[in-house]
Image (tube, rainbow, N blue to C red):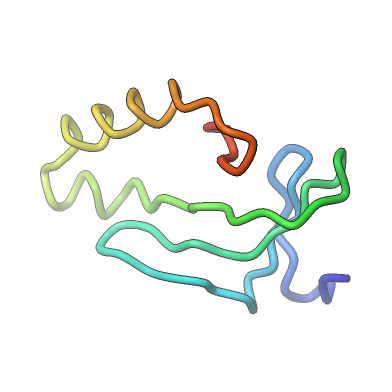
Length: 79
């Protein structure tokens, strides 16, 4: 289970902020748990401020558009 001090909840996902799996220019990926399915997942948390500061909002929305169309049992949809 996730230590409550390091937990962030988004919809039905409990994100473990102490378990960072990766990091990019404007996002971080954390280990999380889908509370509905009781399964482990990875959740990408995007820092919108950095996207605006870098002036890449169009690129970001293009990526979101592509990701939102992905359908695979191992890929969590956009939330």
